[in-house]
Length: 257
Image (cartoon, rainbow, N blue to C red; front, side, top):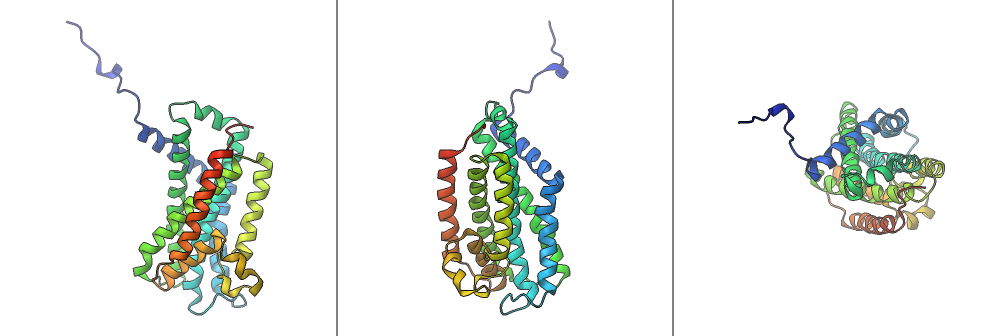
């Protein structure tokens, strides 16, 4: 009788879910280990939060400054990771042929996109925990009944900005992606209705801000965590951007330069 050494038996190929999770773990770890991405994802939002809480010259609206500032900074975190970080990562992965190679592995193109989405959600979860802890030390008191609405806003915002990142990172050259992604981050920080509500910006911005995903995300998080209310109008704006960007990315995304 022949025997089979258990040490050399095969456990079979990994499942699709296992492959996605393994790639997502790699993507998230890479983002968090990258100094530039860590700066944009964690350090800059933390600095913005501290500055907003203490800078009385910047009007945030009626209410405690820290309670108004934290939701806006959480929105900024989503934009930092789901859009800026993911667009730059995708652009350079495409330039160096990483996307093309991964697309023909058992992971597949769909698995790669899913892995990137899971990685973004994992990074955002870390950001929310860190910014929430920092906000707590500054006296933040969120409206607890608004947490489910905040989770919905974060999920829709992550979908919208990840889709926009894939559209940008999958169409422009890597250098162009780097420039545009960082420029958009700065523009949205100052005038996008993210950390400062549109009601506190000059009147001329009101009409534009109503349709921007950045303002919709910031307003929905403020409504949830300050007032404890849902913001279905803002959710509709985020869903619209997410659907359009997803369809455009699916149509125009290039897996190699």
